[in-house]
Length: 233
Ligand code: PGA
Image (cartoon, rainbow, N blue to C red; front, top):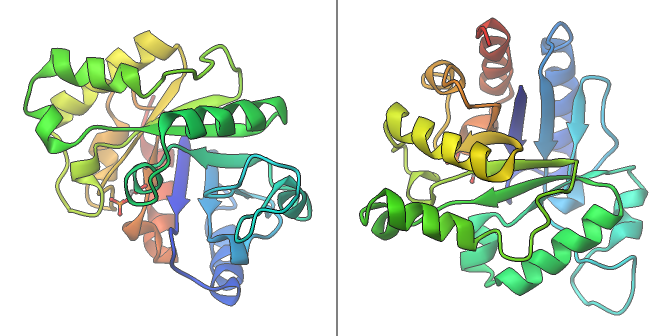
């Protein structure tokens, strides 16, 4: 399974180096695919057991794009994994579907592993399943679902950083719908922590998790990887 950590705008380069060192020794026996997404100033090469990916990148090799980073800056650390479409970028940083799909096209052409994030607001969720699926489908506009190295991260916005998660049945239904629709691996994100990861990973259609706040503590995140190893699939 994929057990991934999104540090968002937390942790310095030094913090991330220490974190990776600890993580590396804690998970050396694990068979999970472990990915961490540090802030861009803390990018570094992947370690033996943990892949380092980027939370974002502008879809260029390099050029005059003040404040952005491009492929050259990722190449320096041999980064080949990227998060695209996270709700914080869609909503707080106003990335629209056209920009997101352009980013997707660019990084697919560069053979990146893409973790493509989608998820609904509580308002949409309250309208029922038909509306929910219609909305999720709209977040795939101009996204090539035939791209091989693609994983879908389902992250209901109302579950991110709130401590609230949908019922396990609701997660299962949505992950199943997503799997049928995309034919890809699907992971869940939104308030995953050591106390609920076991039941989330046990959901039949769940191929992993994307963890935000609870991943910031390396012991907790290592524990989550360990729990994943114990979940029978
Ligand atoms: P959270 O964040 O685990 O803090 O809810 C998840 C995410 O935004 O990827």
